[in-house]
Image 1 (spheres, rainbow, N blue to C red):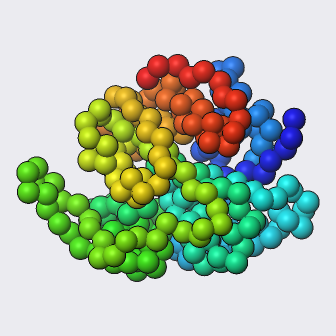
Image 2 (spheres, rainbow, N blue to C red; image 1 turned 45 degrees about the vertical axis):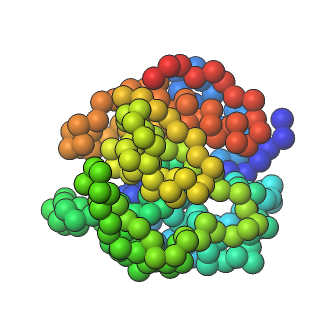
Image 3 (tube, rainbow, N blue to C red; image 1 turned 120 degrees about the horizontal axis):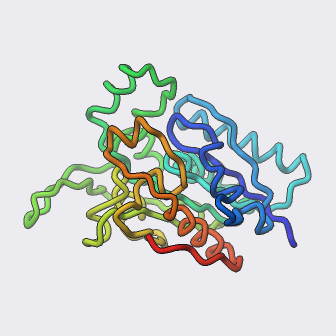
Length: 264
């Protein structure tokens, strides 16, 4: 089996071990490693996102020196997808090193963070990137190449973030594929995984996107991770049948024959 390199970048305030189900599989279902991917975990760090982008640049250079197969695929979960896109934004000349970027539940357009900074301070969360996740952040304006403003949909009264110009998807040299959880079967983009909206995860349908749809397709289940605090605060129900759909979507995008996932 031909080995391919997959750099796994975790989300906000979490280690790459939270992506273990996708990497190693579970309950008899083989993960990415069994399908020929040499999975490398991006080490935990808690600085702002521009700092993490430079760290990932260093990690990719270390992979090259270590003899790993190139070009590589980057799998970015949640905030990790922003770091992956940011790498190409900051280092477009290195796009040839990246075969593809797969983002899972990534808030490309940001998340609503009005109360999150207070919760972060209360819980003494060490991760410093919370402000970068706001729709209005300087980081997302840099990453997407445009700022924006809040608009309200006349029919529903739902507020949404509208960009001033067409957002930049990234470098032309690498493919970007999004996977998004949708907890309902209503219009795609209006709903999401309980934390990231479908519109944000798909860049307003600008990215080719695979939707994992069902009553249990929340932000944690789509990677097969259980966090009791998040589940309690967000009223998430744990379901171990969701993450295989994410795995299957990743494998199919990478051109690998995938296992059959169970219904959700």
